[in-house]
Length: 164
View 1 (cartoon, rainbow, N blue to C red):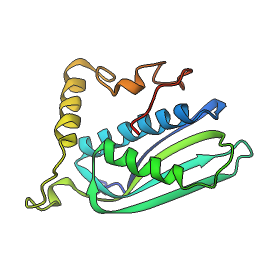
View 2: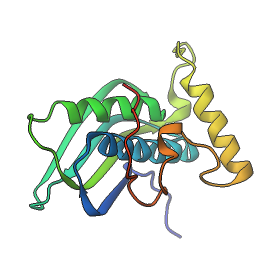
View 3: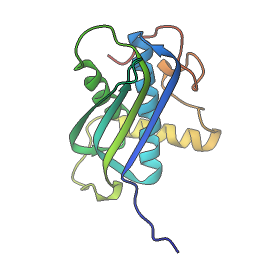
């Protein structure tokens, strides 16, 4: 028998057939990956203290940036917010990425959060409702509107404003 060992991280990354260089496409992919990471965190009963953004350039050099949060999260809106800020802090210039990844580390049990800590926004309720819709109607049955363009397994071709 193998003893249970809690995961150390939850992550999703995607390597693209073509380099992504349009800001809206890049942000849309970060949003999609953030939702996948957060959904897995909630499904497995964890919250993350640290969010990491991984970016691979056409030269195959890899950049990683991370931020540790004051309060652990399992919400895609918060994961995306941090990842978007990490992207924005990169040096200016043309951005082209062959791979994008979002990771959550420093995992703690979701039940470990103090009950006195109440989240003022309603994102938690909304994301848990999306989880219930997907459990009932299947994966991909509900998602943010900005992810509706294109298929979920390939980067979208058009531009749609992303949660600014």
